[in-house]
Amino acid sequence: MARHVMHVAQREDDGLWHIEVDGASIAKFPQEIEAELAAMARGNELLAQGRQCELIVYDTHGVVDRWVPFGYDDLADREGRTRWLAT
Image (cartoon, rainbow, N blue to C red; front, side):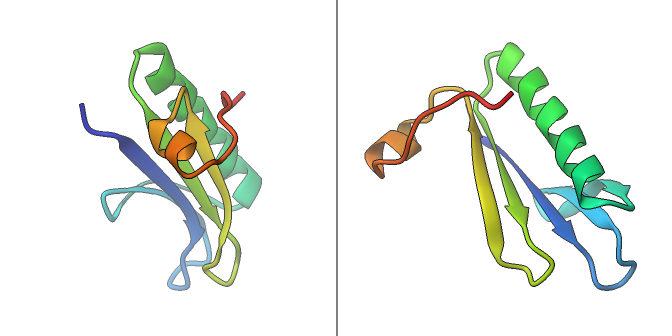
């Protein structure tokens, strides 16, 4: 099963915070925290369905700020990162 990856980033064209999957915006919000909370809720839904997923949050400069794996992430284990559940 393919891993589901969501990105939260601010777009320059409209200044809004978008949740993106496969390069397409699936939702947009005026504040970063709103977009991040919505993406976390979606990640928890997918985890409840038994699907692995990740959330990558970018800062206002487009630099990765946070990486959130949902569930047991073998990629994180291989790279020596801490394994944890997003809440």
